[in-house]
Structures are given as C-alpha cells and as structure tokens.
Length: 337
Image 1 (cartoon, one colour):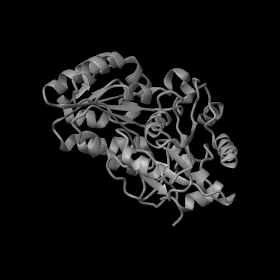
Image 2 (spheres, one colour):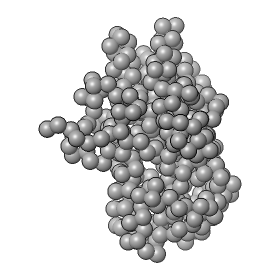
Image 3 (tube, helix red, strand yellow):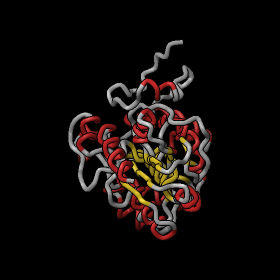
C-alpha cells in the first residue's frame, strides 16, 4: 500500500530513497512527530497516574495538551508566561509528594528559570520533570531568541538532574515511563519537526543505542540530528566508507562503561549535535574518554554561535549542521585518519 503520511522531511532533504526503505514508514506509524507522540502518550499517562500534575507555561497549544488539561482538572496548573514562577510552583508541588511536569520552550525553561532550577529543584533533589519544547535550532522562523544551543550545558551542570533526548516517537514512548518513574529531577529535550523512526531496535535504560554496527569510525548523535546522521550513513556507505552509528537518548547519566567499551574498538568519533560546542555531548564524552581511554574526537556542532532567522534548513546550514556540511567535515577528517 502506498504510504500517504507526511513525515515532514521533504523540506529538510534529510532522507534519500535508500534511507527511507530502511526506516519504519508503515501505515501503522500515524504518530510521525515528536509533538503528536508527546501529546498522545503524556495524555494517557496523566489520566492513569493521579500523582502527576501538569504545569503549563501557556504552551498548551504548542504541546497539544489543551484537551487533557480539561480532563485532569485540578491536576493542571496554568502558570502563564512565567517560567521562573512555574518552577517555584513545581518545587512546592514536589515537596508534597506529587510529581509536577513543567512544559515550556526549552530556551526559556532552562535559561530564564536557571536560578530557580538550581536553588529550588536541584539543590533539594526534588522530583520535578521538565519538558523542553522546540529544543535546538529548528524554531528558526522565530529567530535566535527562541532557539537553544546551551540547554544541555546548563542542565548537565546541575547536580542530581538527568537528561533525556529521544530521536523519534518510538524512543519517546520508551523513555517517558523511565523519565517519570525516576525519583530525580529530569529534563526531557524535545524537537518538533516530523521525523522517521531511526531504528526498530528497542532502547535499553541508560544505554547507548547501537543503530549501526560499531566500526573504527563512529557517528554519535541524539535528538533531531539523528535523522541526518542516518542519511549520512548510507551516503558514506556508497563512497565505500564504513562507519558505525550510535544514538544517545540518555545523555545524563551517560553509560561510561559502555562508552569506554565502544572506544576500545574506535579510532575516531564524530559527535554530531544541535548544541553549542561548550558543554554539550561532545564535551561530556571528551571529558570521560580523556581520563579513561583517550580517543580522537571531532565535534560537529553550532560552534560558538547563535542561530539566525529563516527556514530550518537555512539555519542549520548557517550553523554548519546541514547534511552537506557535516559530510564535508567527515570526509576531511576520515581521510586524515
């Protein structure tokens, strides 16, 4: 049967026909965006678990949670456009044994409310859950003020916090229960462009997902750019370049033992992420391996730059994160190896 579902990738030029044939585009995959998946699964969980409280920062329309807000009644708190206040409210809710889920744009949730996150949540190790919407650089039509390339650096610096970054809706479905069952404060990093499923392999708690067999050269990614990395794998394969593909849905805590084990088989890592060069996954992995098993790493990120205004493709190209520019950099360093 012909696939009639729009996976929103035609504008990004992320997937070649060969890649599409290797991903899950079945008619059953109606939840083809992280936004739809989040709305669907979090609504089911909120109805079932009476201990959860949704704290919204006037983002119900963006997150598609307005309908569930009506059904859970008193377990829904509308804080308005006031992230700092929302975190204070969430900390108070957590003190009484409930589990607050605060949803807002990632840039404001992690940046504007950082003081409250540090003093009211992390310091007391309160079970507050953050859902950062539109993380990374794909909200480019709204300009650099609404994009975030520093959220992982900020949250990873806070003791006790965990960080989750699903790459597709199947990963999100698997991660949500882990995220909510943990007793620690957590940050769920979500992007919203529609996407394909990067792998049908089940993810395991706190494990790096091996999407393609580990090789001497390995591409490492998480979240939105995992889509790009999957496409790059096949393009490099056509050139006769063998690479492994690793996906990291659990950024903090990172599975150090697994990372070190993979490093023993690796000559060169490419860490590809929609984040600033300081404090992202590249920094985290570099610190771990420099102490245990020094391995050559090339970080491909937004460098020390803000994004710009325009279409997502234009913004990613401006930041050096388009498929074309990533491949160019991989080829340069792969030849030098």
